[in-house]
Every structure is written in C-alpha cells, then in structure tokens.
Length: 537
Image (spheres, rainbow, N blue to C red):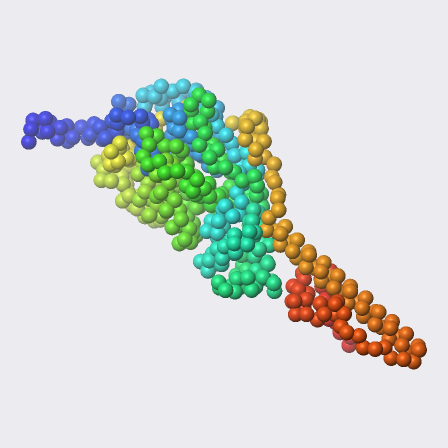
C-alpha cells in the first residue's frame, strides 16, 4: 500500500467528519442543504449538498410533525427555482404560499445563517397559485372523468377489485360509443343506462354489469359528490404543461396547489395529485438524464395516497414513479416515516432527508427501527440520532454525481430565504387574478357529453311513447264513438284492421320502452295503459 493510501486511511479513522463531507464535494451544480453535524457540533466548513443532475432520481422528506419538513421542501424549492427548474408544491396547510414573498430577517435567522455559513438574503420567487376546481383561492385545476381514468377513480371512490374492474368496463363502453365522460353526471348517466332494460344488452357479450355493483358505484358517486367533488371534474381541463414554465428572468416558476379548503378530503386531493403526475408522464417525451430536471414535484402527505390502495393502483403509481425519471421529472414524497411509502416505491427514492422521529409508543419504536434499516451503513448511532435531532435538523443521504449513495450525514439545514408562512389572503387573491392563466381556466364550460346524449335519447323515447299512447287513446275513443253510433242505428260496426298506434303499442319494443320510462309522466302513462291503478277492495 502506498504512503498516500495509508495517509488517506488514517485520515478516515481520525477525521470521520471529513470523510463524510468529502462524499458531498461535487464538481457540478448542486443545492446547498446545510452544514454537517458531528459529535454534537455544527461544522460550517463541511457543507452537505444535492447534485442538481440527480434530482430526477426522486426523493423522500420524512419526519414527525413539527420537525421542519415543510421548511425543508421550501428550501429545496427555492434553490431549484433559482437554477431555472420549475417546481410543484402541494400546500396542504396553507403555509407554503410565502415562497413568493421575501423572508423576514430576525435573530433566529441570523443565528442559523452563522451556524451553517449561509449568506442569507430575503428573496421571493416567481409563483402561480392553483386550487382544485376553484374551491379556495387559486386558478381552478380540473380534470375530465375520462382523463382521470378508472383506476384513479376507483381509488377515490374506495371500490374493491371487482368493482374496479366493472368501472373499467363502463369506461371502455363509453369510449367505444363516443360518450364523453367529462363530469360526474356523465359517469352517473352511463352507469344508470347500462343497468336499464335498454342498456343491459350492451355489455352482455363482455361480462355485463350487475345491478348490485352498479348500485355500489352510484352510491359511492353520491358520497363523492356530497364532499364537493363535482367542482373538480369538468372543462376547461388543466394542461399540466403549465407546470413546466420559467419566468422572464430564467428562474423556474413555483406552482403552489392551495389545498386548505379541501384538507378534510385527503383521499381526494392525494389521488388528484397522482393524476397530475400521471398526466405529465403521459404527455412528456423521453429525454433521459439531463443536467437539471424539467420539473420537481413535491407530493405532501404521501401516506394518504397509499392508504387503502388497490393492487392495480399501487402498480400504476410504482410504474409512473419508475418511468417518469426518464421524462426529466423528479418526485419527492413528503410524509412522516419511510414505512408510509410502499417498498417498491421507496426503493426508487435515491435522495433522503429524514427529520426527527418520536419513540413514545411501541409502534413508534418499531417505525424507528424500520427507518434505520432503510439507510446505508453509517458512522452514527441512527436510532439515538433520529430521536435527538432538533427542529430544522435532519439525516441526509443522496445520490452522488455518479449515482452512488453518499455517506449518511446529520445536517443542520439552511433557512429558507422566502417568507416562512402564508402571504396575506388579499395578496394571494390579487396574485391569482393577475395571472395570465386566470382567464383561461376560471370559468367552467359544460358542453354536450354523455349525460346530454343519453338524456336526449331518453327524452326522444319518452316523447315517442307518449305520442303512441295518445294515438292509441284517440283510436280507442274513435272506435267507442263508432260503436255507440252503430248501436244508435241498430247496425254493428265492421271490424277494422289494427291501427298503426295499436301496432306500436302491442309491439315488444314499446312494452320494453314503457317499462324503462323513469319519469313521472312515464309512470302515469304506464298506469293508464296497463291498469296499474290501485286495486279496489
């Protein structure tokens, strides 16, 4: 062994902090996370960073409530924007909107900046504010039911595997028949039609749709609508390429999806975030590895996405996360512990920022041990370290420029330079209305789709049935009058051939149609024709 190799080995033993820091000495552009913590001290000369080119390899920001996860994603988002990379943030609690406004100086900020060797300057970043369907402040983000698809719809409706397969059949039928599923009333109309007397035969050749399953789907849709979901589906449909824009000064636009108004509907917004990601995957071309990502997508409250998910849904999420890297998109999941994310997804998250965990209960202790096992071998006692980290401190490991994991590093994180809190409601509203996208997406459009087409066909059928019934009644009265006239003259009337109206009324098609009439008018016609009035005692 050479003298230089011996010296390096000796340095590794005597200066483990230097060995860890050396793993973060990248040559290309990188984001600065903070300074290394070692043996109870913060070492401002030992900087911990993430290579910009590796941010499409996905990541995880985890930690207990109140440990600083939101500030971490704000810190990363700021630096991405400064490097010309667009960012998407889901603002669950309403405290991320401040990223567009300069931060407020103070003693705590100054102290943190000194600790980590940060040149802190209050800075706001270019941003757009969105809302789901216009509920709450923001440019409305809508999807059509067709674009949302049966797998995601099954997840948000909490359907089982059999019901999910039936929903897929319904989507397939609507697609082949040119029945556009734009909003929820379109889906409801198609489901109701396929279990009517007229519609049952439509799916008979490919398995059919049971009335029980249809009933479950319709009830789930009703519950979904009562949560205000009607607003989320419709047109104009949001073009996810809007999330890829840069500002005039070259900085990436930070797109903030404001969710406080729907934070009591976690299944809904987590599934809707998955739609945004899946839509980006479908639309973007393959680009391979880039010097910097085209977009970094932060998926907050990620555990809600996977809770109660079907096998098909998990497969869809896993495939999207695995393949969207080659489209130039990085995804960071933000949650409490790594165990909240399925193993197949977690295995694809190369960049990790783990804030403190609590171990107050046996379940907490189990989660802590599971988290430690997800990290590479470390010079730290991670079980002890993860329970002792302060707010704004985290355990970090990322992918180096050659794709290898860096050494595990306890880190005191830098302070965001934008406002750490929400901007004033009036300022947010003004920013939304001033956006060029407001006029494009603000007003909903309700054009002809499945509901209108099926309603028109049913109305035409009912009108035809009503006309036939009226003609039959008129014919009956004419014959009665003729018979009465025959009695008056003493002669019997010759037997006439069945009239057109009688032929229509007597046909099997008319009887099937009359049975399917669901309106009050249809029921009254049925009673008059078939004697379904109340029996006399």
